[in-house]
Amino acid sequence: MAVTGLLPVSGAALSRDPRLLASVRDVGTRPGIDFDYTDDAATAALLERHRRTVAAAEHGPLMWLGALLLVAAVVWPFAGSAMPAFDGRPELAYGPAGPLLVTAVACLTYVRRRWKRELLHPRLTGYRHVLGLARAHGVPVTHVPHWLVGRPLSGNRETVPVPVYGEVATLPTESASAQPVERVTPPVAVPDTPPVPAAVPAKPAAVAAYEAMADEGGWHDETGCLLLLAAIGGAAWAYSEENPAGYLAATLATAFALTTWLAGARQGRERQRLREAALEYVRTLTAAQSTGTPVPELSAPLRGLLEEEAARERG
Image (cartoon, rainbow, N blue to C red; front, top):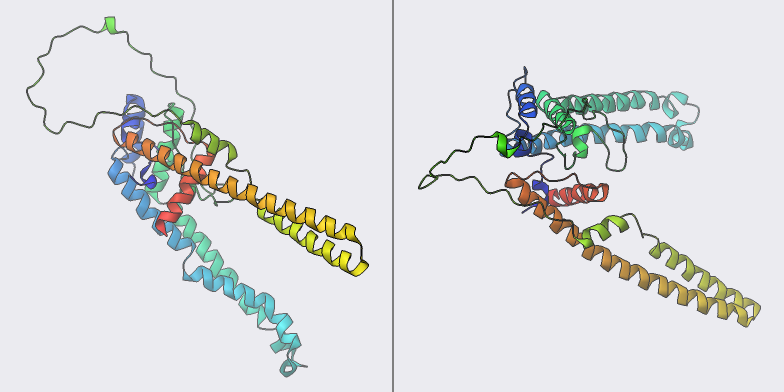
């Protein structure tokens, strides 16, 4: 099962608390929405369709045109003043930069407004309210896709965040003795039996290790290159000064560089192994969610992994 099939919250989880279900139904019947957010298949199709629309609005041809015009507006005064053909003609050397800049700003402003308009589509706005209601009722939201709230992959600022509702008290559990015991003869055959909810899998140790080391590493290659450059410099100095100490320093720096690269390679292999274990864990959660089991909120490293894998699967 694809990792991207994991929904922020399933319809079964939204239906467990009748108060939450009523609120979700109310959101779905608002003017301009008319959507059942408890239908997992329809919700997944809705999110995928609007993800493409938002991406097209943000990274369409007009955005690239605006970026090129902006670069041209910045470069033109320097290039124009250096061209002999424009000597003594400031209207040609500097004048075009103004219209280019105005056009670039107009293009980028239009792209920004169109992108935000797509984010504020009534059904996406309604879904953000559903996620806020789920959190308020204590239902875990596995993750919030970065595009849904207008958050860049490398930042934390959200253009349209999930609304925050006041916390709702948990429903008291009714005791078994308070319910009358009735003997019901089970039917002979039950057509269209819903899938039996699967148990939420425990987090494997490999996944916990991946979460711990997700932000580690990344410096071995750079450090190894610096040590190798130091070794080359030491050898050159030893040759020019005829000093054997330089050769010794170069040998030590080379040995340290090789050791650093080997350590980085080992860490990379271990990270890849743990990454595969984390992906398998997310796939297991996705399978459990498809049977109606509420799954826990993903940690920050697993949310990042989910975003990376989703981008990779989309090509």
